[in-house]
Amino acid sequence: MAHRRSFLLMCGTVAATALAVTSCGSDSLSGAPSSPGSTGSPTSSAAAPSADTSLQDSLPQALKDSGVLRVGTNAEYPPNEYLEGGEVAGLGIDVMNAVAAKLGLETEYTNAPFDSLIIGVAANRYDAAVSSFTINEERKKEVNMVSYFEAGSQWATLADNPSGLDPASPCGKRVAVQTGTVQADEDLPARNKECVDAGKPAIEVLTFSSQQDATAALVANRVDATVADSPIIAYAVKQTNGQLEAVGDVYDSAPYGIVIPKDQPELAEAVAEALKALEEDGTYAQVLQKWGNEDGAIDDFAVNP
Image (tube, rainbow, N blue to C red; front, side):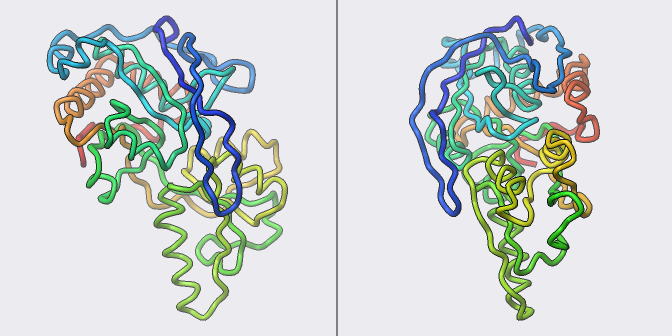
């Protein structure tokens, strides 16, 4: 969607420290929508899809008047959402830009800590958020979620798994994870309970405000493993040129959702209809193919599935 205008309100550098999340303010930066460049990112791009006037008519009046969709993201989760040359890029960003184009809107991005995004949408600081959010019941209590992709969880260790980690029983191991994720909030606590209940050592969980910092901790041998969404682990393994390897199978596959305020059901429905239109015109398949994630395609774009 290279010829559409996009804005990014960037958070300053986030210091990722174990067992803590540091929030930050934001600085403004404007520019063209992200097009991956020289860091091994995909380079193909498709023209922005044409706007659908019937979908435009279904939007809330405030969005019709502004013409801008304010989107929150945590641009530290490559290849789904990240910064490329100071601009947002990634699979999720391309999907969001295509949805906005179909709705006749421009996008204005705010880069913020992951665990602040749903709060921001619920408070109507953002019209939407896209940041690889797995749809679950807890999140649906706070916001509307529109399905657009599917991914599971995956573990990674240093090459050859020197700690002998078994994802099914990581008891006593040091595990890096991004705060606010399903892996941090649901997966690891459940596995840790199994360890403790069996009389085995607890998992030593180190949380980071970005997955990039969690991965860096593994590369530096500060932890034994990291666990994240499967596309993110596959990308990290590829980008570290043999320093890391994926361990175990992908599990707990579930849909990602674009987050919409609970009090904006008409916007949520418009986003779902835009995704259906993008599937029909081929844009959706082109975006997934660009990022090598065709296996994550879904055909049921629903509100709160």
